[in-house]
Image (cartoon, rainbow, N blue to C red; front, top):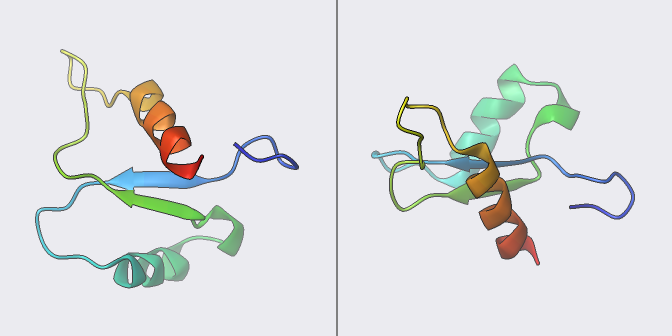
Amino acid sequence: PDERLGEEVGATYFCEETLSETELRGFLAERLARFKVPRFLHKSDGPLPRTASGKILKRALRERAAELVS
């Protein structure tokens, strides 16, 4: 959530290899417009939650991210 914009860009990711937030931000900055690079990054301890059909549970990730930011 964001007071001025309504919502702020964030991302939750899972990576089995060692990946620092700085490395990820550098990778994204080379490939995305500056305003599209997530302000908040959260590394998940395990694979992202999925539905029975394999789709990522975005609502669960959004709720968890809102808890972390608050």
